[in-house]
Structure formats: structure tokens, C-alpha cells
Length: 106
Image (cartoon, rainbow, N blue to C red; front, side, top):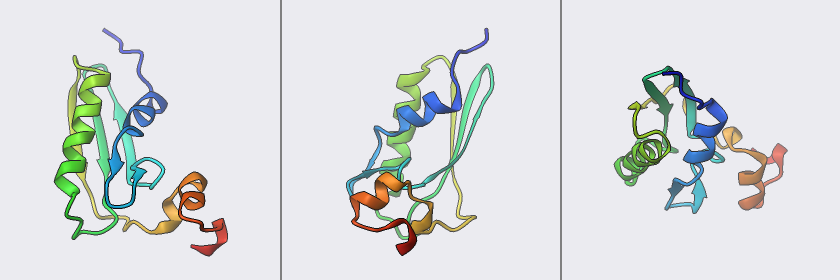
């Protein structure tokens, strides 16, 4: 069966996941690096703002739950990666505005 999902739909679903330390969704924070879709699987590579992030496991669990709600019939893979290292420049303009930063401030 071909699934009608695309990367945009997955990223939209992941916008429901909020980093509780900063009060912003993980997509706008730039924490989602890759989304790969097949007929049977959703694979996400993501990072945290810091390797010491105390909310890391909770955020990853919420990512898995959001993917399960979006496509319960598909297998899910959520991989935490540290390369490239996250920087504030990876945030969307929406996130930068939320923090009061101009796009050229980071």
C-alpha cells in the first residue's frame, strides 16, 4: 500500500512537539534534520540544542508518539544525531522572532 504522507505532513505533525525548556516546537527550532518515508516506515533524524539536554528522551518519546498518531500503521525510527552540531542559525525565522532575534543576529 502506498501511503499518502509526505515530508511536509510529517514536519507539520512534529510541530506539535514542544521543547519545554524554551517553549518552541522542535521543527521551528531546527532540531529535525531529515525525514525519510517509505511505504512501510517513517525515519527521522533529529538533534537536541545540547548533548546535555535533560529533556532529550522525553522529546524523542513525544516525536515517536506524534509519528504514531500520524501514521499508526507505519514503523517508526527516531534517531538522535549530533552532526551537524545544532546552532541557533538553524532556527526558522518564526523561532528567531519568538526569541526577539533578527535573522542576522545568530
